[in-house]
Image (cartoon, rainbow, N blue to C red; front, top):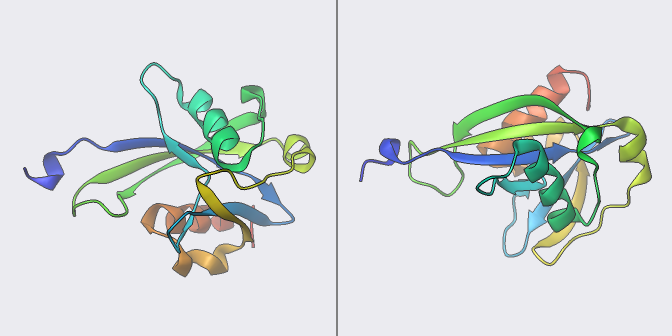
Length: 141
């Protein structure tokens, strides 16, 4: 099958920002940094998926009312055939809520990292794009 004919991978992610750094994770068995997030389940809203993924990956409860969509990244999907795209809906977290939660790695996450745009080389294409956009918006260093 032609990879370009494969459906896009739709995901939701949260950009939890503190002190001009954004939270990223390392998944078990991997060495690249990812945004906390994942695939949107059938029947689930994008905002609900972002909140669920934050709970599953970094053990934080985020009310959907504290999430605001920042942008959508569309790029080559990491680890997929050339031409298969990921569409990542990135949500910002209300600053007061972001300051009040205590992220911890879940079973599928081995480590948490508070990063600046300087970590772009540690990320797959979507994560690199997110860091560059957050820096361009003046949200991270």
